[in-house]
Length: 300
Image 1: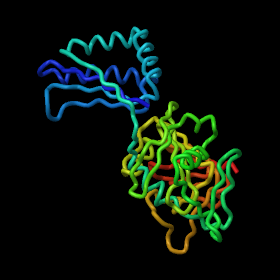
Image 2: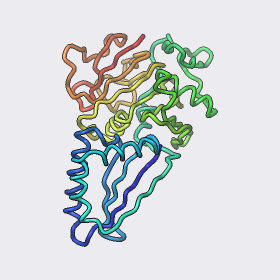
Image 3: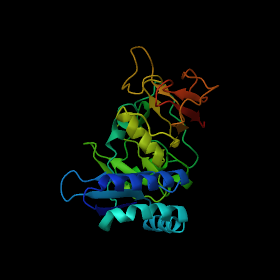
Image 4: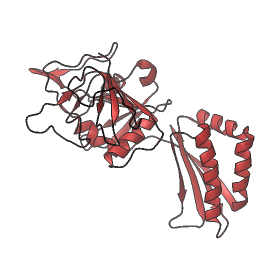
């Protein structure tokens, strides 16, 4: 995974016009589906002015080069870019290899909300998935993977091999520091089972990571970015109604869905699906009537 920054020095007093011109480019590229899932525009707060930085994250240098070729071959893109260039006095490009991914907003959901199931039956693994180790006498209580090899095996068990084999794998230590164990090329991020007692490895697409970050920051998810996630080793949740519950209400059990996939960020398009987890072995809506409502689809 690489990060690309195009840094432009804009003519004095023309930053507003330059940003407006670039917004037109960005809106066009978004409409055409040409922008990667992770991109942003930065301006100077201190230092040389006026500076405009265009930043994007892509899976590989080859992907970035292909995006560039597609843009340059598009006459409408070139016409819009020519509106921006008169405002730029100079510029340069920086390309970085991403070796550590800090997705701190994922921590609470992965290791607080993911907790032991009330069921005494451990979730069935997907075909080909790494089996979950258990503590003696405590069904479903997973032994946390400790070596890089074990963590990669755990993380990749959350999704089909076609997804997980090229996904970025991140891990967390006891201090909740996130480290990239393996850089990916397909835009997916997989997380191994962590210090929670349950078995909860997860794989999310790029939009899914954005959705999760918005959730944990109590912000609305980005609009028009449907997302998908895999939890083929299963998962447990404290509440089906409260997106931020860390434990079930007194007297209520944890919700054990078992192996499942998730369709995230589709607004309120849930007509016909139950909005309770009375039967978590059939499809249902989690967190209904909130910005974080999503469809849970058991696969076992």
